[in-house]
Length: 174
Image 1 (cartoon, rainbow, N blue to C red):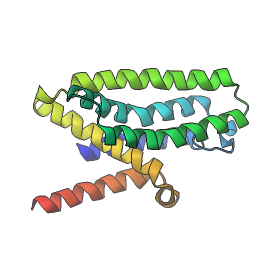
Image 2: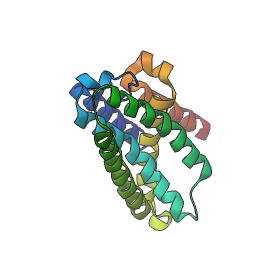
Image 3: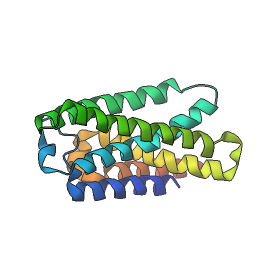
């Protein structure tokens, strides 16, 4: 399921790139030639898996500080780069703010869904959902936090890292 989560994120990211969202994180305004909808959808795609898992940590008695720090460290520079790029591409402040408000609402709903679906007492279904969300989250974090690797491998970077991670866990289990 971890690989399925990573593949889902990678396919979604690839589809967004093909529809004009490849420059959605560009601080120099490269978004002007892309699709504004792809920028919003890309931000939502990035936020859903992390919010989903964050919702689970609330059920476990509080927000995981390390998870919250990881989310903040990946999203803050990405959001700042996207926002400044959108401003350079001609978006007004209200439009940029509205875009981020939509992302926040969808992410909040994802956190609530994560809290409901990933309930720790949920048995195998919860474990499957956690593995799926973890794969998507690791793929998203990899694409954001390893720009040099992303420059070489592109949208496959996250899935390749998740596959390596899963293989190492499999080898350790032997």
